Image 1 (cartoon, rainbow, N blue to C red):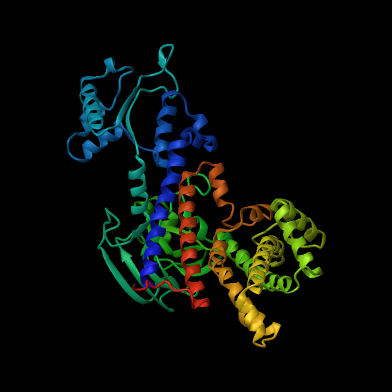
Image 2: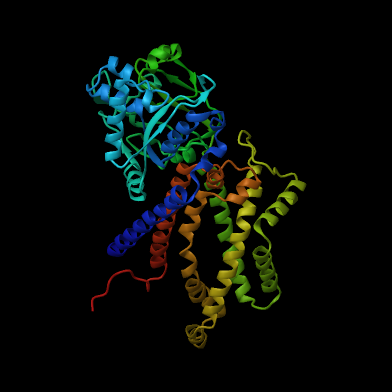
Length: 522
């Protein structure tokens, strides 16, 4: 079993890398990269040369290429001690055309060009755009270098950046002592409540480990997952955080800030991250914090996107199995009778009618009976879950009924059933002890996939009922050309698929002792 699982996992990981690479090729190589500006309000405000520079800088942020401006190059030289500030001030000024550059500008622009061209970059010089006798708005001369990332380098960069481990050397220019401190009494609770925590100095997060009263009770910031940063859907936030952060209105709690100030606040002090110079820039921070660990998230009243999708999905899955399997068995036991025909009619209806159509139909019916047809987060009513759950369960019920009926009928015609009848077993005993068990074997393989699939949400159902879940996150990202979210979600969905297949195989081996993944010696 261990050997099989390792082999299966290895194949799954190879498939995962291949899937991510294919999607990267589609997104970064085959799709027109200018489409990312269709949802960018700042792009239309740029003029002339500034517009070109803005395009390349945004392409760098989106992961298409590496972009280096001439000014950035001079700053690097100053930082390395190869250039003084006085000479930089002279060299940084580009002439309207290259022949009008100063001696210093010609020298260092030539160095810039030679250096980056030697590394495979393309160097681009934009002459000033003139309007009569003056430079037009946004028409200042520009000099920059750029280089498209290869598929392999982009792939390697993505996977090496998936996991980030925090440590006392994470902050480069941390002014104080770098250390880890363990405490049994967390200062967030005023030092009065038994709540163990490990607090860092020089780390990216203030709290690496801490304990509180919220599930799963023991939390950590030591290891963070980075699936990819959003530029449109949830600007500046990682895909993983977008899916797992709570939503809705603020939730106030009494907390003690590092300065000793205790008040009701929505700030999650356990999420505090280092933000260089922030303490000196804000009087509010100065009254609450004692150092630059001021970047905090906030508590929200409601579940995360994954939370809503999982609750709706898991209840729908349980409902589907509780109804679909018994109904499939009843249909098989009463083959060609009225109940079998009614069940077949329902299956055909679900298959034949587009999902969008019957979801809207049940939405209208539910609304007529007073059920909420639109999801509202900041309400205590649980009735708003009813219609999305029913709409999501309907196709799963039909699918389970169809396959359970088919497997049952196949088993009923098997030779071992005939032998069981000749042995004196009743029809009830045959069904309960033999037919139903054997028919369940292929069904149980899909149970892990159904459970894990609930995390990803349902695109159509969540859109129709305005559920703040994870289901329509991918479609939003595709429509907005948000590359980071697209890659991150594909990665996440592929990983869930691999895990569900492996768990399905394990579950099948537990249900049917005849199935073994051990290698037999010959």
